[in-house]
Image 1: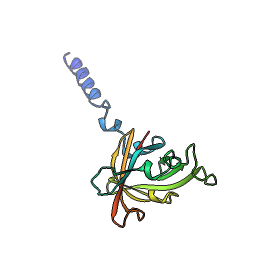
Image 2: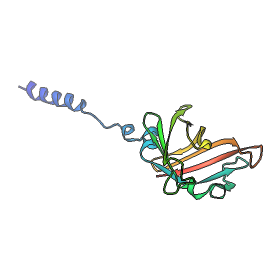
Image 3: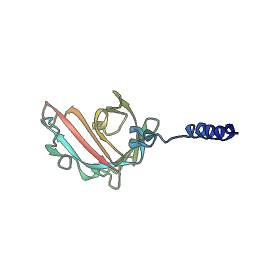
Image 4: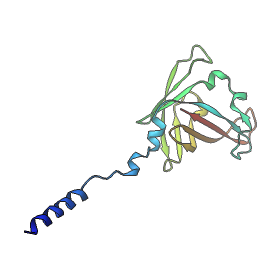
Length: 158
Protein backbone atom coordinates (compact mmCIF):
# COMPACT_ATOMS: atom_id res chain seq x y z
CA UNK A 1 0.00 0.00 0.00
CA UNK A 2 2.59 2.51 -1.04
CA UNK A 3 -0.04 4.32 -3.10
CA UNK A 4 -1.73 5.83 -0.01
CA UNK A 5 1.41 7.68 1.31
CA UNK A 6 2.20 8.81 -2.23
CA UNK A 7 -1.34 10.19 -2.58
CA UNK A 8 -0.92 12.12 0.69
CA UNK A 9 2.40 13.61 -0.49
CA UNK A 10 0.88 14.61 -3.84
CA UNK A 11 -2.12 16.16 -2.11
CA UNK A 12 0.13 18.16 0.23
CA UNK A 13 2.23 19.37 -2.69
CA UNK A 14 -0.89 20.40 -4.59
CA UNK A 15 -2.34 22.34 -1.66
CA UNK A 16 0.97 23.98 -0.76
CA UNK A 17 1.51 25.13 -4.35
CA UNK A 18 -1.89 26.85 -4.23
CA UNK A 19 -1.09 28.84 -1.11
CA UNK A 20 -1.14 32.59 -1.57
CA UNK A 21 2.30 34.15 -1.66
CA UNK A 22 2.79 37.77 -0.74
CA UNK A 23 3.44 40.05 -3.65
CA UNK A 24 6.13 42.61 -2.76
CA UNK A 25 4.46 45.13 -5.09
CA UNK A 26 1.24 44.89 -3.06
CA UNK A 27 3.03 46.52 -0.12
CA UNK A 28 4.60 49.30 -2.15
CA UNK A 29 2.51 52.47 -1.90
CA UNK A 30 1.33 53.92 -5.19
CA UNK A 31 1.67 57.61 -6.04
CA UNK A 32 -2.03 57.99 -5.24
CA UNK A 33 -1.41 56.38 -1.82
CA UNK A 34 1.49 58.76 -1.16
CA UNK A 35 -0.20 61.95 -2.34
CA UNK A 36 -3.46 61.28 -0.49
CA UNK A 37 -2.12 59.91 2.81
CA UNK A 38 -2.47 63.18 4.76
CA UNK A 39 -2.18 66.95 4.43
CA UNK A 40 1.07 68.32 3.03
CA UNK A 41 2.73 71.40 4.48
CA UNK A 42 5.36 73.69 3.06
CA UNK A 43 8.96 72.66 3.80
CA UNK A 44 11.02 74.92 1.55
CA UNK A 45 11.32 76.15 -2.01
CA UNK A 46 11.34 79.26 -4.08
CA UNK A 47 12.22 80.64 -7.47
CA UNK A 48 14.90 79.13 -9.69
CA UNK A 49 15.74 82.05 -11.99
CA UNK A 50 18.14 80.20 -14.29
CA UNK A 51 16.19 76.91 -14.14
CA UNK A 52 19.15 74.81 -13.01
CA UNK A 53 17.24 73.02 -10.24
CA UNK A 54 18.54 75.21 -7.41
CA UNK A 55 16.47 77.82 -5.56
CA UNK A 56 17.86 81.32 -6.21
CA UNK A 57 15.19 83.27 -4.32
CA UNK A 58 13.71 81.64 -1.22
CA UNK A 59 9.91 81.58 -1.04
CA UNK A 60 10.14 83.15 2.42
CA UNK A 61 11.64 86.26 0.76
CA UNK A 62 8.70 86.56 -1.66
CA UNK A 63 5.69 85.15 0.20
CA UNK A 64 4.54 86.15 3.65
CA UNK A 65 4.53 83.63 6.49
CA UNK A 66 0.72 83.61 6.43
CA UNK A 67 0.95 81.91 3.02
CA UNK A 68 3.67 79.48 3.98
CA UNK A 69 1.68 77.97 6.88
CA UNK A 70 -1.06 76.74 4.53
CA UNK A 71 -1.64 73.02 3.98
CA UNK A 72 -2.79 71.14 0.92
CA UNK A 73 -4.64 67.81 0.92
CA UNK A 74 -5.05 65.63 -2.15
CA UNK A 75 -8.03 63.30 -1.86
CA UNK A 76 -8.68 60.12 -3.78
CA UNK A 77 -11.09 60.85 -6.60
CA UNK A 78 -9.01 63.81 -7.83
CA UNK A 79 -10.29 66.50 -5.49
CA UNK A 80 -8.41 68.38 -2.84
CA UNK A 81 -8.55 71.06 -0.18
CA UNK A 82 -6.21 73.92 0.65
CA UNK A 83 -6.32 75.21 4.22
CA UNK A 84 -5.21 78.69 5.25
CA UNK A 85 -3.47 77.31 8.31
CA UNK A 86 -3.21 79.10 11.64
CA UNK A 87 -2.63 82.53 10.10
CA UNK A 88 -4.76 83.96 7.30
CA UNK A 89 -3.28 86.64 5.07
CA UNK A 90 -6.73 88.15 4.60
CA UNK A 91 -9.21 87.59 7.42
CA UNK A 92 -12.14 87.58 4.99
CA UNK A 93 -10.73 84.67 2.96
CA UNK A 94 -12.39 81.30 3.60
CA UNK A 95 -10.41 78.91 5.81
CA UNK A 96 -10.52 76.20 3.14
CA UNK A 97 -10.90 76.03 -0.64
CA UNK A 98 -11.46 73.08 -2.94
CA UNK A 99 -9.50 72.23 -6.08
CA UNK A 100 -9.15 69.42 -8.62
CA UNK A 101 -6.03 67.43 -9.46
CA UNK A 102 -4.88 64.50 -11.59
CA UNK A 103 -1.70 62.79 -12.64
CA UNK A 104 -0.57 63.21 -16.25
CA UNK A 105 2.08 61.76 -18.53
CA UNK A 106 2.33 58.34 -16.87
CA UNK A 107 2.25 59.97 -13.40
CA UNK A 108 5.36 62.07 -14.13
CA UNK A 109 3.35 65.29 -13.76
CA UNK A 110 0.60 66.67 -11.56
CA UNK A 111 -2.13 68.90 -12.95
CA UNK A 112 -3.96 71.19 -10.51
CA UNK A 113 -7.02 73.24 -11.46
CA UNK A 114 -9.55 75.50 -9.76
CA UNK A 115 -7.11 76.33 -6.98
CA UNK A 116 -7.74 79.73 -5.43
CA UNK A 117 -3.96 80.28 -5.24
CA UNK A 118 -3.28 80.83 -8.95
CA UNK A 119 0.45 79.96 -8.88
CA UNK A 120 -0.55 76.45 -7.85
CA UNK A 121 -2.69 75.88 -10.94
CA UNK A 122 -1.40 74.11 -14.02
CA UNK A 123 1.03 71.30 -14.74
CA UNK A 124 3.88 70.52 -12.35
CA UNK A 125 6.72 68.10 -12.84
CA UNK A 126 6.92 65.64 -9.96
CA UNK A 127 10.52 65.46 -8.78
CA UNK A 128 9.86 63.33 -5.67
CA UNK A 129 6.71 61.77 -4.26
CA UNK A 130 7.38 59.51 -1.28
CA UNK A 131 5.36 58.83 1.87
CA UNK A 132 6.99 61.85 3.57
CA UNK A 133 8.33 64.19 0.84
CA UNK A 134 6.75 65.78 -2.20
CA UNK A 135 8.84 67.96 -4.56
CA UNK A 136 7.42 69.77 -7.57
CA UNK A 137 8.68 72.18 -10.19
CA UNK A 138 6.80 74.38 -12.62
CA UNK A 139 8.12 76.63 -15.36
CA UNK A 140 6.34 79.99 -15.40
CA UNK A 141 6.85 83.70 -15.94
CA UNK A 142 6.65 85.98 -12.92
CA UNK A 143 6.35 89.44 -14.41
CA UNK A 144 7.50 91.27 -11.27
CA UNK A 145 10.88 89.55 -11.63
CA UNK A 146 11.36 89.55 -15.40
CA UNK A 147 9.74 88.46 -18.62
CA UNK A 148 11.98 85.40 -18.78
CA UNK A 149 10.68 81.99 -17.69
CA UNK A 150 11.68 80.80 -14.24
CA UNK A 151 11.02 77.58 -12.35
CA UNK A 152 9.04 77.43 -9.16
CA UNK A 153 10.34 74.76 -6.79
CA UNK A 154 8.00 73.60 -4.04
CA UNK A 155 9.04 71.07 -1.42
CA UNK A 156 6.31 69.75 0.83
CA UNK A 157 6.39 67.32 3.75
CA UNK A 158 4.06 65.42 6.06
